[in-house]
Image (cartoon, rainbow, N blue to C red; front, side, top):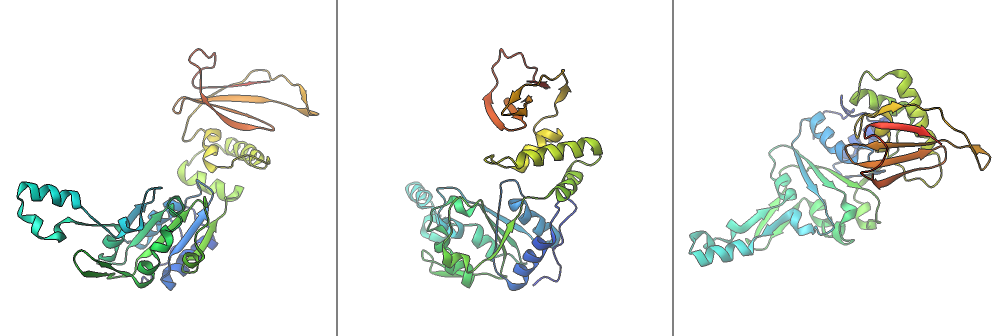
Length: 297
């Protein structure tokens, strides 16, 4: 058990409740299940925990076709068949064809590691149940070699989920749960300052005000990554070209429409005081310049 406490890092702004949840899971030696909106730092949390506590990190990224057995080990029967046809002496020892998975690698770590099981909700509904015994007892059996693998140190297990499907109750009862809330404006200012220091205060204030105003519009798909196009930080760095805005009445409101083309993703962003959405690729014959934002009605 480590004596260090997680308090965030220089590159990761963690709230007090997240710090408490992580430290509680580490102390109680239980997996921590992290949920939250996309872009709120769920996966990155495992990297920051490993760095802050000076622990090795083992990453297991889950796909829709991933099986629980693959995290333990995989038996390469095809390679053994090939070697038998070629007369390779390795074929007589089946252990040569047992490929350890990420869970096995974490179990054999000489120091207490961090094990990331990323986006567990992508897998089949039975996937979490298939790992119950292994994560609870910290051991599993390799039937091909008749060998029992036990963890040298209980890993710090970080499990992330985008909440695309419900997880089994039996699995949830074994986890310490925390939901990362979307950061408020004050926390968002700290996050932006960490990653993009030196931004003009007026620009940041105006961008955040507009961003959170858009987030409050009902029915929008909310994602923190959209803020990057407002601050000109990640997806694009657009030049702003201002034209005299026209105004017309729409539902008794002043309606202003803005389009912005991102030259990196080749997509057109369209937003206004009551709508925000992302279109497909911009037409090659469009009059809009690749790095220009045009304000018009």
